[in-house]
Length: 544
Ligand code: G16
Image (cartoon, rainbow, N blue to C red):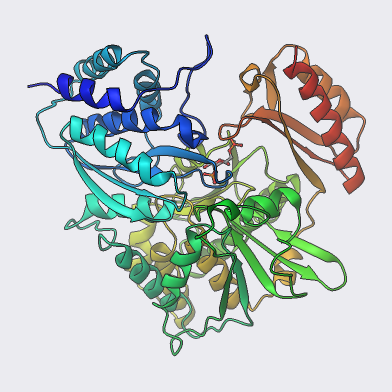
């Protein structure tokens, strides 16, 4: 028995929109992402890949998330989640690309059968694919395309409807670990809330949270999900006063518009609406609730932002102290993973003050996650607020099984164990990360100002540059240098030399049709000037 006929028939209903000669669809930083009207055929074919992947991995459930996260409402995207909730193994990105770029339905069937044969996949065993989507209206029809792909290949589809991206990752892991000693939690959205709420209350024991937290939800799926989560926290256990704002999911066009974590990080200001209240602790999620940025508007110094680098150094420092207090310092290796976008001051603080190793990887949580798994405690965050902390099985069992010799040691061990459940182990999760930050601030009795005082950021600037063909720009050295087009890097080097304590780089975005330029320097005006200069270099090379 094969799936040829069924694939042919279904594929005819989900055609691929051909690209210009010589251009191909690529599995980018976070899967296939583009204008939603190009995605129907791609999503159908991702369904075929997901069922191959499930069968390759002995019928374990594979996840598919339909979201374009921080991108505008007209975009959408599709990405695949592996059985333990991490991103699709990188070798398989090539197979995804091969399926998606097959020019005809017949060739699609050929690629599918060739992959099955080459990878020794038994097409007769069961396959299971679980999926969710964000609040974008296009998600609904894309789900139909995905399900057609699953049905043509006789995979069992499990619809989890509208979810945040990290919730889908949770559900994939929970599904595959159900009934085993490593069970990750109940296989339901409620199970996710219960797990987080229970761990949060445990981590907050004998501590209290000061003041109100305003959470901007980018008018995305995070809004309703955060409101739902808050119902699971009993105010008699932890008094957590949260004001959820920008949670309008009924008007699709306002998604990520002048609000959300990407807006705050790139514009370096608070969302204009609702009008920011001076001094109030605030944070922003992005469109699918996997990024988090904290900030407040200071009556004296104005807007102050605490981005992914800050969350990373805060978490590394707090967990480092707890590990020491728990008497596990010599047993557990802690490390931090960043990308080229990390502020130089944060890297210095982590290596010199916290004395922890830092590794730099290319952009994309898939890269950071992998490297973080090499530590017992791997802290990884992108500057844009996307990240988490991973604990090895050894670390988790040390938290649970170490016999405390003092009440202080017991407290440290209990808090670490609670963090092991509170922090999403599958992927960066804005809701879980926000709870982590609140726990740390409460334990340290810190305001955002105390947190911001730990070191001073180097002034920096991010610029988006539209070019005719972003694929011309290729990088090396964890994206810190351009290898192509020839000559461009040399010009960037010359520009950087003109400024004090300066650094700059450029790369093609993997989620938007543009290049990004990052610059930092000793003063704000120099950082701005350098970013503009480099942007002009990129513009020029982009049209050559
Ligand atoms: C995605 C990825 C992130 C990445 C971001 C920007 O975020 O998951 O790891 O930092 O895109 O990537 P690029 O600079 O290549 O466009 P999100 O929140 O959009 O899923």
